[in-house]
Length: 109
Length: 286
Image (tube, rainbow over all chains, first blue to last red; front, side, top):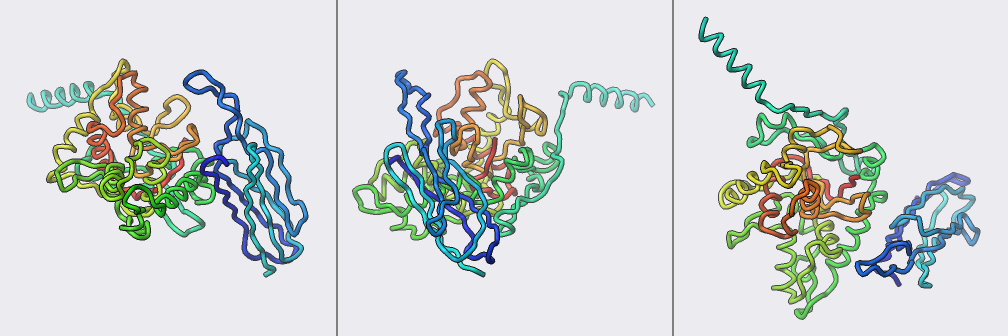
């Protein structure tokens, strides 16, 4: 696992039925592009998060393929319609095989 | 009559000898409203006594930034510096060193550090001027029997960030009298000393030309109340001494090392110029 990786998510605790809510996610990650060289001229190997997904009650809300040009600490903000109470699962997939996950439940107001 | 003419002649001579000043006040002086009103940080403060006649008012560097950058600082979720605050808090609670202690073992919650940032750097019991980094390493080495952290390393910056946030909103209030006076004088000398092939002193930009363009950015008054800063350019936290080093390097001079006595003195003087502005904890800058 890469160093100091910590997912952060902001989801409202409640929403009205069929309300469109804003979701913000941020994960601390170096996102080493594979283009840089170290002091000795050796290429620093690529090490990024290559995929981010969010599901709500098992249904895909967003599925993003990520590329090396994406900056360090990638931030995603997106909207989702809430048909029912349930659980969001956010998943980040690292090049090194690590998977980081965060879950947030939401109630109907 | 003759006296009057002579006086006005003298006044003219004075005017002509002044350098071209172009202090430009920011367009707006709105406060920084964080997390939809949870905390409000004023961006203007009245000039401390020792700067009267030099700066009309103190302006936070936040006022000179683009609106998008300003917005990032108004929400702790969108402020990328807060990632590192979280990491610093984790470190605060983590046992390290041969004594089997963490910071929390002695100091308990990190909230106990409230007020520390606003008074740094300050003179310790032995009469030395210490930055927050010195206090952290003293605790680590003496009490925790752990290794000192690298001044510019991630763990140190995370820790100073986590400690700084505890004082967010408190006015900067560094002591400049008594034992601090000689250090302050040394820092003041440095502030007005022209360095490097470009022969630039801190004052040439941050006092004479704040609000004006420098390359593609606006100069601020150079206050340190927002440090450590999350700089978008580096996509990382930047410490005060690293920022000093960068500025002096940009004058094409040999810089002082981070953690040097010179930079501690400069840190004290620059902090005193911002006495009255609130600690911005981890600010976001270009």
